[in-house]
Amino acid sequence: MNTSTAEAERTTIHAGRQLRRSANDKMLGGVAGGIARYLDADVTLVRVVTAVLALCTGVGLALYLAAWLLLPEEGKAQSIAATWVADRRNQSL
Image 1 (cartoon, one colour):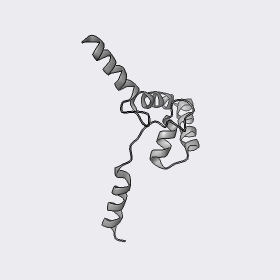
Image 2: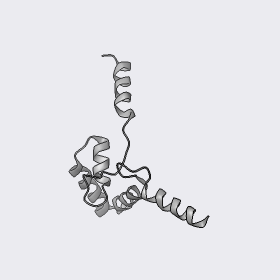
Image 3: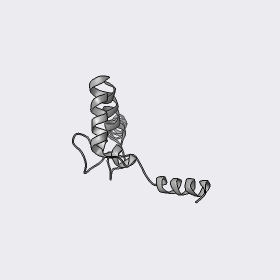
Image 4: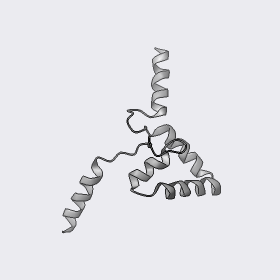
């Protein structure tokens, strides 16, 4: 297999993949489960990395909260933040 064939195959495999919060594999908001599924990684590893970032720098908590608000859950069209903004826009009309 040459380089262009491998690159085309990799692009085809990842083309349909979307980053979403997990509906099944969740402890808090499903963010770690969704990221693990997207990266084909172990969810425990993602949770440990997030916990270390949160404890050592505080960045992990902020990123987790942002992902929880901005990533839609599997099976849903909009994120929590997008739903909240749409509701506020409809109330003001």
